[in-house]
Image (tube, rainbow, N blue to C red):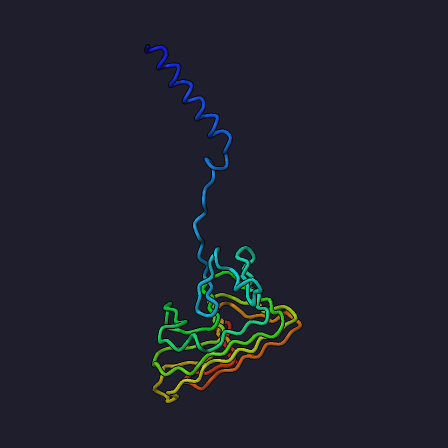
Length: 202
């Protein structure tokens, strides 16, 4: 009786081993975690599962090459009506249409006409920039980008509100494409169409 039971058990184990062997992908598949990137577009953080806008993308991101492609993209202003929308807490509070917190250079490939427009902000000590980058940024491509910072309701000298079309606080900002870029600031205590590098402002 013991011998028959042992044979049955061995038979079952061999059958299981054969079945598992028929599906190696099932036994070896490892699901990668959803990676988050240091990039927000229109207030939404870009991830490995969310690296393009939709089926007909107006923006997409290649994490390997650190390239953001804008293809007829417009961020609109409706999203920023909520007080915390598009606000990123880093060294200071700033709202941005596109926000990049990475340290490696970000390449922005422009296709078609792209528009970043920030609304008016009334909150004190809240800067806003149509495009913000902590690292160096390079704009390339044949398209255009028009980026306009929001107007600050408090423009007095005691206000801490700043407005930027582009604020790139990395080592530099480069414009190597054949398209056109236009950066305009709204009024504020400190307003710059383009502020980049560590000492250069326009």
